[in-house]
Length: 109
Figure 1: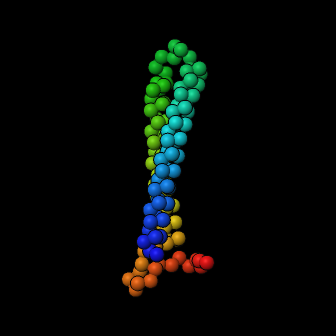
Figure 2: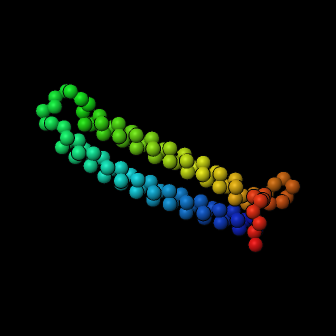
Figure 3: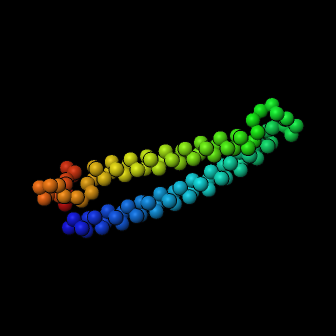
């Protein structure tokens, strides 16, 4: 029984990591599109002969990319925390030292 639960948990974890990978791929694609839109918008708003008055477009885009990277890292950490909490609350099928399966307080039919 415990091996079956462990197998199911492994399948669920694999599906979750695949889903996370898909979501990160979507976020990456959307980030690229956003950067292209921002680049176009800034190009339209800034006068062509702006000189050295403000930051260069490349610097602005680099700052946006760094911000997006930090957001993705924070999302990955949050997902790890949520997974750890779910494992703790729902139980991961491990046995306690007394030989009984760990319970989470939820009655199962």
